[in-house]
Length: 391
View 1: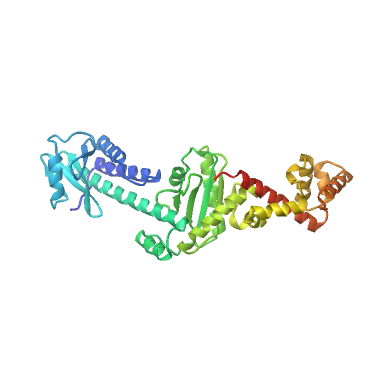
View 2 (view 1 turned 90 degrees about the horizontal axis):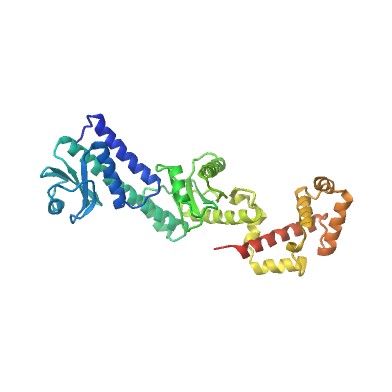
């Protein structure tokens, strides 16, 4: 049966119900709940001034704006068994709502006129689509989680992707978003920001991180990723979030490779916290030597530090020495420029460097010794991070 919307009031009913569906999906809902059904029919009643009741297939009430005048429980059960999709019974309109071609709910519109039928038909249609959308969203979310965690065989990845209508050969990148606001629902915020119609996947595999699997165009992927990361950071700042960090892996072209990009993003997040704590956005391909150090076993790191510093550690150096070392490295081992920036005489800087050489056996004015010292400082920083890291 075709339905013609012939008045503005009825059209507004459809628009408002549709907006409710989209808004709730954007807030990150997975499975339809009785409360959502109640909110939907409450909104419909306010707009259309028609009462509704939603029953399960056994005639039990799920949501209602008013009791069916004649009870309706028995009638609902009989209606479910019938072949009809809609039926008028004792001055009420009954509609079936399906899940996988099986009746899941019965929607009852209280009223026998054409407007009651039309509004009920539209409400049933919206609830039907709502159930489909939630189920698909839930299935996709589980698929993406298992994909990221390498819980799927390759053959399962492609068969499930096809079933869920997910393209398998698209440029994608895994991005991880963290903030210091552990009690805030960043997942729902980002879902709302990226929108329900986005081709990106937004999920979480633990309590610490939100993962965005971003769908990329065929153009300049690097600029597109940076733009997306900045946009998410800016949005979360406006929402009052602090300590925002975004890390991302390399671009992959096959869906089976998404987990690799995710692992790279995780490494980028950790390495960024250790060696690039001044950056809010960090890419896996920008980690440099930090990526190598991060993969070293701790016993090997301790052995290396003992060889360089003996029983001492860079943590034992005073603040003046550490500042001098840092400035010297920042100025590419240039004595004149370093002394100028530290507001000290050149001879004072030379004295400090000589003193450091006597303590460690390394002369930072010699490139090879400077490299060794620089790596040693990074190794100590990595060890301290791993010692204090909270899993």
